Length: 426
Image (cartoon, rainbow, N blue to C red; front, side, top):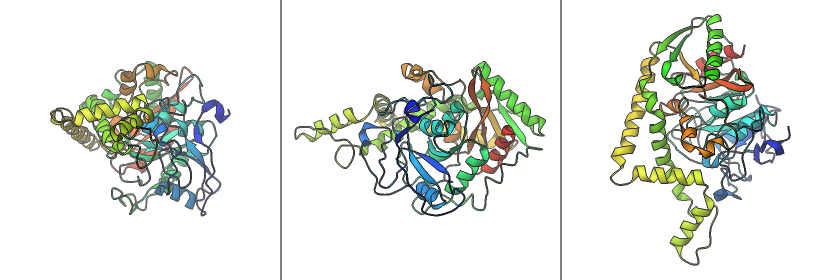
């Protein structure tokens, strides 16, 4: 299918490799919130239309150093805010599996490009599921690394404490090989660590789950679409047949994860997006000499409806009189989520659930009901709140539509989730 039908790319421009390595000959789509020197980076927004960064993100340099060719900047929900890739200023991306449905978001362009063979591999960013959701909806593999494993230098910030750059690929091994290239400490990003030093994530894709214990949290299955649950349970049964065992785990805090996530994410977004004022870079409106009028008009014209909604929500949550009522409680809930996962991982190796509780939305469905779209993130946001690694791997199909199995691991447990996910493929 031609990209013009899918709208998977905002910019199609080749960035040639600068070295040789494990990605020789591979083509990679890069989400359009990751800076590329000399190539437009828009974040899917009118606000940054025409903006050309003077530098490349660390992950981009690592890609080209490893022999990859970057073939374009992939479409995305504006500033990463969305679950469907419909909030892009440059139009929605369509799902290659069913073009009347969304590819998921916010990294929908990256997932669609891989699923449609428009690129061998892709990079996305995951703030509350933005790599795993489109991976599940498009039937590909997506990894959200442990916070700090991959440099965020050059990633245009949405919610700094939550987001990570992650790989999308047709198979677990290919996704893990891409993670091998982009992972590692970066002096330009003080949040990175060398905790994964010496790991080979691609080598971990050996399918050996003999003796592995998989935790099944009832909270992440409740309310999910029946066909999605059946498909995921069948995939888990296959893991058991290969030597794994399952046990129930309790994660009571995840019932509050979506609420906590949206308070924290929108609060950080309201601060991060304050820099877009029409003065330094990006869209600038004519204010007839009045700075306040120009500032207001710039943001009115430059931001789309979803971005404005989240800025307003975040500003409200941080405002005097409401900080303790909302933001502080959200941080308490975040600590509760982290504690629940730590307790669970004392007894299990990975935690399994549906990646998304529903099949891919029809185009326009999520935009008509933003609350339903937010609640669809219920299974993915907990891993971001707890800063844990998670992978979505195709589990099969329900009524012809892809279903993803999510596997969450302990901190820096990428090798474990890759091993389990590769067994699902086999």
